[in-house]
Image 1 (spheres, rainbow, N blue to C red):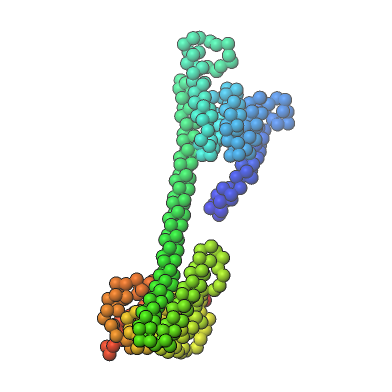
Image 2 (image 1 turned 90 degrees about the vertical axis):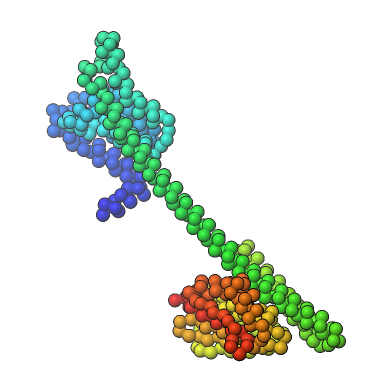
Length: 395
């Protein structure tokens, strides 16, 4: 309850200040009949009462115009002549009076403004002390000054300074919290940018590594076929090179479209895996098991990239006579992916494209984003296998 009231006070400063001023003025008006004065005869009320009423009415604008309100209340306090604030607090109906309003607006100035005028008015609370000292040393002055007290109004200045200091302390705390919030926001922004850079790096690696590797391998095959005067094989290799180049360009355009926040086509997903397998220059068997279901876009992209990377390694290391098999298994927990081949060079692939290469690292990073795992290794009878499990991320 108290927390909600404080939140409301912070969220509606102008209305809260108007309410504060109205309550203070109302209490002041109610207290008058209990003194030797009465509101029924306003002409009998002292001028200090009207000064008090004006000071508390000005509190309605204390946060909107802190310095002008402070100047008005300070002037009313000085003219009123009730400079001993401690004594005023122990008076009768004047417990709510201009000195109390002065404490409140000094706190407000310390909390809400850094204007040099605040320091001037704060130092001005020592003016009664200066006048009293002059009177004590120079004799009576042609001013209606009260008798000099024992403390020379120093307690009044200390009280004013404490009120301002409390407001300044609250302001420092609020500024520290604001700076911490800014730092936290900047940290989150930097983390998001770093994550986005990693995502783009993975995308770029997968696009370039797969398609360029296919083009390099097929160019070597085309060159060998031409030397053997095998025009059919050379033509097929050149066609594969063209397909890989067109695919790379299309995916790079798509990636740039996302960078410009205007994608021109959906990113590849589960449906693109079979097409990927069909145009490769090696035999790739593709099968789907389990009950197919809707696959979230991020999960589909991760599956496509994992299969793409695994088949790229097959092209690089398995040999031209190798074949591969891609299997997708739908299970309640997620999507299970298995890519195997019967090629050669398994040990080299484990060292070069696996544990210490970017390919397997990228596959694991993609799987981990959906709470999944990736495992890869050589098969006992020759060949290589990549297994990945991607968990469903949609409700």
